[in-house]
Amino acid sequence: MAKNIVIVGLLSLCVWFGHRIVVLENYHHASQLNMCSEYANPVDLVRREKCLNDTETRTSWLWHLAYGLEIF
Image (cartoon, rainbow, N blue to C red):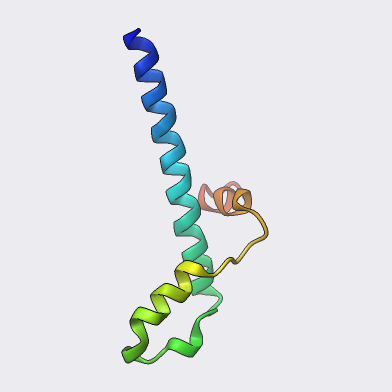
């Protein structure tokens, strides 16, 4: 029973880490491509953060995961 709980916990942790990698790689790629350049003023930093978080830079989350793990 305890072994199953540990396995479920580790799987949940892997899924959570994978999700965070995808989110961070999407942000990183959007920033590298300068996708939110209209908010370059220091006054618009909050809008720029929102834009970078909301921008989709690749066609699938799998690409973000692959690049985040540096498979490609």
